[in-house]
Length: 411
Image (cartoon, rainbow, N blue to C red; front, top):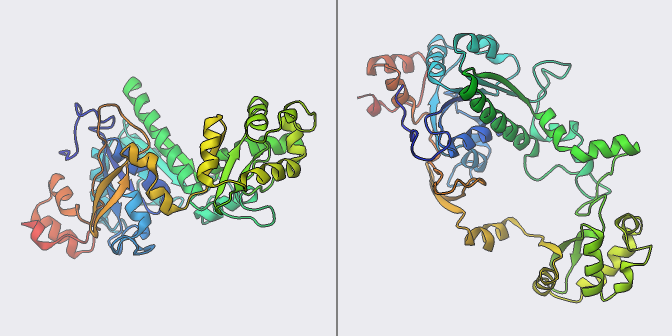
């Protein structure tokens, strides 16, 4: 099938790679959007009756859903009814042209439709298949519904998030993002492996396992002590002082002192108490954690006497880590993002918005920031690439196998 995205020689790492994705929500679309960011052609297969349900989460971006705009730029939207023979036939033809096939249908659905990893790789040995789910393809939770907040609960993320007296989920879809990023990294590794050995790979990513990996040191802490560190708000269970502290103008600034050398400098140059660098009750991080209340009270006494700007400037001058507790509006205007020119215009069916460049930079290469597709916008062009005539496409539309193909595009 002809490719419409840049090919090798553009400097884009995935130029020439085609990804076919039967995807919805967050986890899989995040992985494939980053593949598009790196130059792959991503063909997003959506249901004719509304498409990816993330399209309907809200209407906050010129009538479009914020999740969908975030996750789907640079893709081509093709609508197929995979319950119909015609829709499945088109998908089979698309997969035959692909380097990567990603799906996050309900567990077992891809196999029932004829697109299981074993079957696909038997037909296409160089194909990389990526199966994404909430809990994995085996085990007692295999068929359990899985949404981001539910996985955050099952993976104990909420038990370590929020204030001490109340659990909270992360304010972003952390479980989805974890799964999406592991799907991306595993796919890139599989493509490298294919380049060496010639064979594709069958990958499986579960949200529970990805989020559990992110629990990291919490798991080992619980094994070693028999208890969870628990919820600490903006504080840190193993480091002190490390928390948000008040300032004279009402803003909060987080201060993090990571080691005893930093503490000695902080105590002498900010607190004016060089003796605290040698006092056994204060000199070591273990001691400071044990006396956290006294440590935090002393730090807050000093921070509350100055403005946030002056506090941050003072801490920067003595080499102590700090951060402002920003809101989303502050992030939009963040001077570091502006100085590094991280914002780019992105076209959507609802108008132009600003999007952040991907957080990986390829020297000398401007990563593409392609448009967000309308539902079924590319159905007719992709079908024509596969060899379907205008009459064939009209027939598929009439039987419900495809939708959202403007009649004028069939000429």
